Length: 270
Image (spheres, helix red, strand yellow):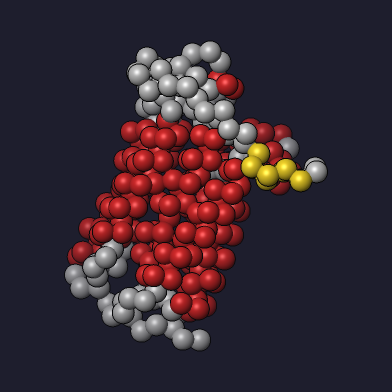
């Protein structure tokens, strides 16, 4: 069994102001996305130029924060929302959902694409290779904060999380860091390095993330207030990823049938 590193979840404290590592991980994710987007914008088939990258990150950040909070409340704490709708705005209590954040980003990119007269899938294909770094950073923040721990196990690398009792558990946050962060980034960056049919990169992201998240859920402790949704093993995280995989397959099939050669894009210089 490995020892859980006792890291103060508060990275910086200045009087009553406390900056948590989890918040810093969000900033790291957005900064990495901005840097990688600038690199991708240099390509001839990129839908955005370097100047427009900053606007993309701004819209994406809004989508992540707003969508992530709404998704967390509606997907995981809907009963609390029905009892007190204003709890939706209690962001100081924490709580973010990846699936909600993804939907929020999709809506944000749709409206941003309208301003540039671009198809939303041109923007999603450009954006999804930037996402895994942020996902991985977020999981690292979860690990430092000792939250979203794994199920009880006797594997040699199990850890005892201070807030999860005395039993050793899977460090499932690190599993997600490796799969949803590192491996997903490598797959998408490699696949998108060459021109692909429109929707194909977005579809591959949905498939890979959905599969990785579905697998990791077998090692991650289900939410205490939800438990298993069905079959005494299906979790809410797995239930939400199934549509992602199906939509991802549809996008890839559709993309290769309709756009066998990626359309050449003239960058918007406005």
